[in-house]
Image 1 (cartoon, rainbow, N blue to C red):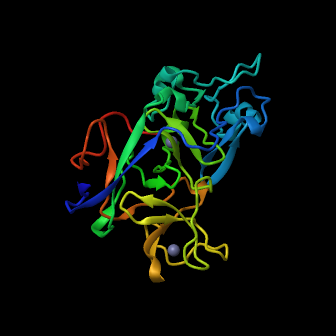
Image 2 (spheres, rainbow, N blue to C red):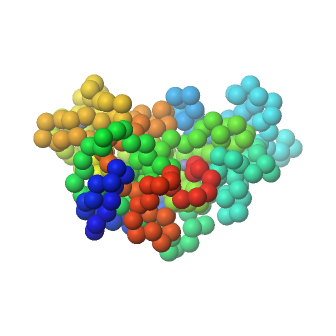
Image 3 (cartoon, helix red, strand yellow):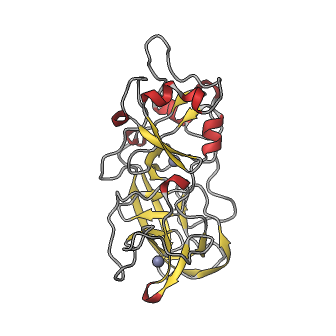
Length: 284
Ligand SMILES: [Zn+2]
Ligand SMILES: [Zn+2]
């Protein structure tokens, strides 16, 4: 269909319509008691580290962050405060966390979105370089994995921890917010991957500017050494494409080099680049 990209180029776009939840298993995210093992929790990407979020981590969290204001559990029962409703999720799963949800482990369920919820993406069929580096907006993200899950921008870890909340992702690097449903903050191999050129990484999705996203590592187990500031490069017949980042870095790419499309908000039929995404608080 016709579309207009971020710098005004008029071209043809695919419209990709995806549901709030993937085909693969989601969660777990928050442990519910301080004795719960890692099999009942997820992980967070903090200071370039993958931090497992199990019960003992929550028990020790004030020490971990050297901050006595952390208190996520009942010392008598060990029960951890976990958001348990759509309303709690909406109030807690945003960077300006409602004060009554400070000191919570935040998890939202895809079922809160309802069975008909979907997100529509407009992505150029023929990608082309933009005049200047493009920053994705929090609603559109970096792109879409081949299983239909959004590759989101970095989780706002500073705001999450600043409100003394935890917002774990599962073993696939994903969790749910009330705006797009389930989305990834890392590329951990849970989507289909298609082989590309011999020895080069596999393709796992398409960026919102139409260039393809590959796994981080080539067949030799190493990341290409000529990636640009956005994590892209040109390679032989493959043309320009990106390589996903290490999960611990909490940023699947860093920016986009092509003129980008968008995720459409509400009843929109075209991208609106006059502001950054639809109104409302920034997304987790
Ligand atoms: Zn490459
Ligand atoms: Zn998120």
